[in-house]
Length: 184
Image (cartoon, rainbow, N blue to C red; front, side, top):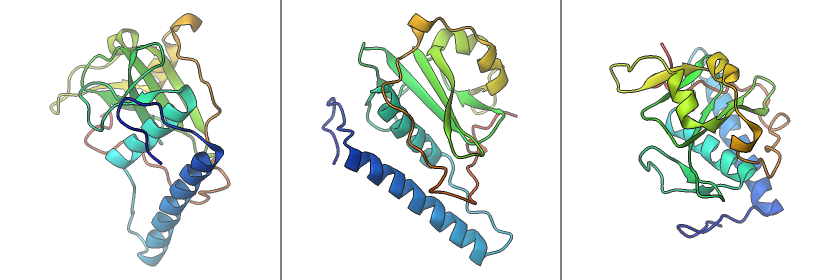
């Protein structure tokens, strides 16, 4: 069940359950591959982690996703703000190519829960980013984002709880962003 371009997605209980189930299956396959090929990591990263973050944020914050790989932003909020979304399974940080209008940074914790690290103006987050790297990205640590003061009226309202994955993807490793965008 997909929404037409520009339409809000339908987040029925069935669709939400399907999302949880598909992510569970994904990480079950990862765990099986790692068990079969001992010593080899089959880490889902890059676009996959980013897309999971985008879908989870769209669900939790009532966002309308833009077409994949839209420049600079991933979604539009109900109030019209353009939103860049980042998800990490790590503890270091995320990277940005440009200053977004609004930024949401999510972390999938070791206990398999989604946590909002940052939900605020992109300009404030951009100011605490490091210098531009060779790949054109600027990194920002999660601790630096946690220290940025965001007024409540600047945050996007979270309209739904994050999906619960803890009981669905036991014994799997959630990666940091891909090496191309992981802070150095």
